[in-house]
Image 1 (cartoon, rainbow, N blue to C red):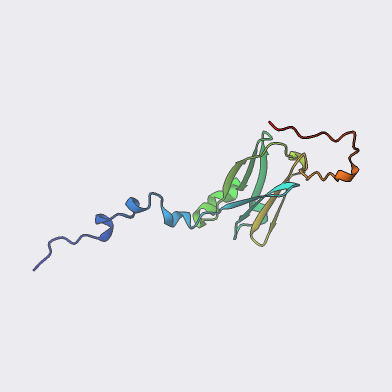
Image 2 (cartoon, rainbow, N blue to C red):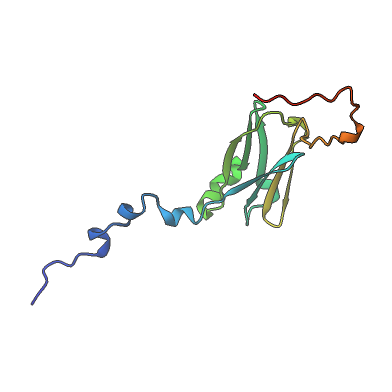
Length: 139
């Protein structure tokens, strides 16, 4: 028995039917991790193989934080797969003048300090005078 045409498994069951996104491309993307502390917001991204001089961290209109590779180096880096460009909207109440960045061992870390530091308020009931104590009312 001779088979006139051999079908590949991708033509019968293409992976795009099961995976609507290109999962192979997603594995190579650089993700930026965002963490919060009471004093600041911290953005960190692993960008191995990029020189410190080629990285730029900018603030646009006091609203957006932009992390990218330099335009001149981006053309050469795009060929080798080392280009990087991310844009984030900054949270409210941040100190734009206090933003700092460091690039150590292939990890770019940008610290955005808060303009109002969130701290817990501790009230000792013994310190409150009895004249200020009010009974709680039920709704």
